[in-house]
Amino acid sequence: MVKKLMILGLLVTSMLGYLEWGGNHKMFLFQVESELLVKLFHDPLTVLHPFTILPLLGQVLLAIALFRPQKWLILGGIASIGVLMLLILTIGILGLNWKSGLSSLPFLTLSGVVLWQILRKKSAA
Image 1 (tube, rainbow, N blue to C red):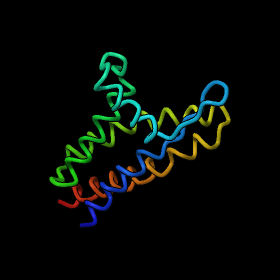
Image 2: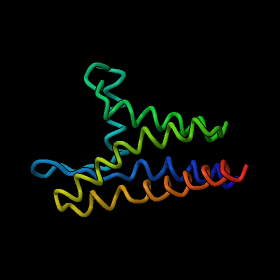
Image 3: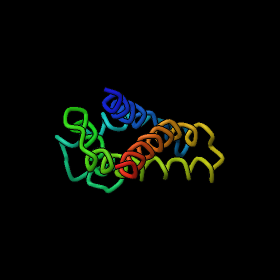
Image 4: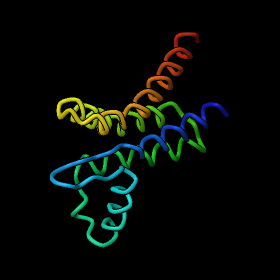
């Protein structure tokens, strides 16, 4: 039960990333994802980019892991989403944009806890 709650937490926190770019453009990742999913069905070639497909794939893996919690699904989901979250954190730090930087910390922190639990169980076995 705790593992499923952590996976659900990873899914929720993966959507909280905050992006700001050029001028007055800003969105949370869940808003970006909704636009991407709409575009995916109308014009799939416009959304084919590693930084759009990889996190979506990671969320699919975590959604599957909610019902069938397997280590490789969880690790794959964390890695896929983690790439984007680490990029958001790096951009937030380098651009002195504290909102973007801080928005990635819940996912990265929870990922660290989940990874620590997985590695702890592996070393105990």
